[in-house]
Image 1 (cartoon, helix red, strand yellow):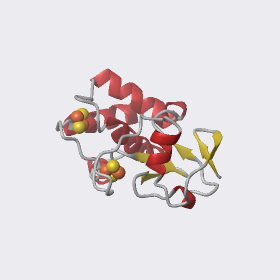
Image 2 (cartoon, helix red, strand yellow):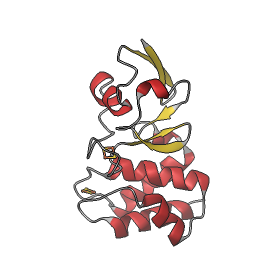
Image 3 (tube, rainbow, N blue to C red):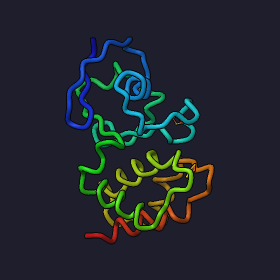
Length: 151
Ligand code: FES
Ligand code: FES
């Protein structure tokens, strides 16, 4: 049995220590907002925050999370940066098919928490690992800027 804190709630999950966090979220806890894309840390669809840092949950063993709090797309709207990002995404209709967008939002929220007024270079660096098959990159950048401008 492993204890894990997700979006402020502690869950007991009966899984092997080396089970990827993404599997625990989706298959054990039914939190399907975090997406499976590549499974090999290359696309960013599975991005969650662990102790405030964006991580690829497909490549993080649940046993390595320990006491660190996990925040997912289901909980990011309760954070100041997450709320701004989600509003900006809605205002600008950033998503196309939407598959990559939970990961994009998690990456953007982490950026704005660390760097409230990012430059274009900051945005490009923070978002570079999040792939969008629909090519919504221009709207993603606009969304980050709009969220940053909401004091
Ligand atoms: S599914 Fe984890 S990075 Fe692609
Ligand atoms: S919106 Fe379709 S993959 Fe990004």
